[in-house]
Image (cartoon, rainbow, N blue to C red):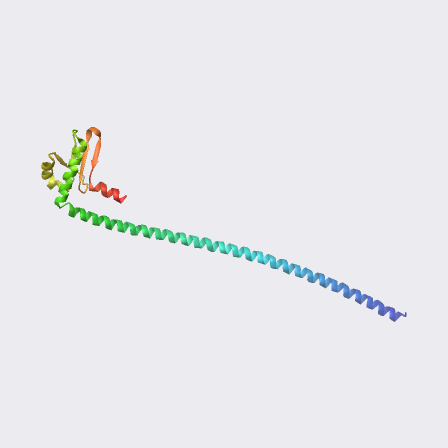
Length: 184
């Protein structure tokens, strides 16, 4: 083998070795790039998943907050409406009571209440009060019940109140008490 052939063989071996080395380096670099790309994709997906979960949680919290605010508003509106209706009902009741208090049935009711209070007191002394608006009925009621009545200095919307001092007892047949009980 002469020098040219040796040189040609050496060049072929060097080229082959260089090509093989370059191919191995390229494969290694390509594998490294693929791994970096895959890791980047995985990391990005994790970040995106976390961001999506966080946004979902924020949206859920905001929705719950809005629902709670809406519920509170509805409850306030309902309460206001109930109060209006309640006031209207009690206004109508007061009007009907005033009309009832002008009838003979009301005088008969007062007489029954006085007699019930006297029955509770039995032989003990009882002070029976009538509402100031019923002052015009006092003579008739005293005659019917055969008991001295007192006009109260505090209005109680009709009915009677009795006090048995020996028992420290209040008998309250007033309309005011009944209306207050119904309001509560």
